[in-house]
Amino acid sequence: MKSLIRLLVLSVIFSAMTGCAYLNIQMPLDKNFNKTELGSKMGVSESRSILWLFAWGDSGTHTAAENGNIKVINYADKGYYTVLFGLYSRISTVVYGD
Image 1 (cartoon, rainbow, N blue to C red):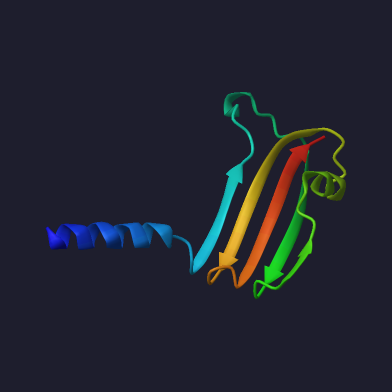
Image 2: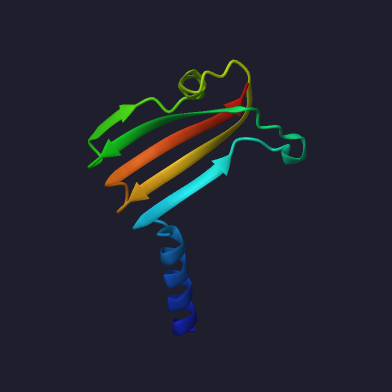
């Protein structure tokens, strides 16, 4: 019984720490994938932070659309890049459209 509890506790700890040393993911901000048309242009915006103390940038969809000279946004992704529990972090927004 003790080993079962120990295994359960360890699995909870390890699942909570997933991606703590290194995380690099991109996820969609849409649900209707079968109707998605990306468009001919792409724009990116980013914000960053270091040492949990300093943060700068603008990772909004409006800024991403301006950077890609996009007037109509068809699709958007959000990306997260983190190293060592957030010692360095970058959040990016990628928009597609015309």
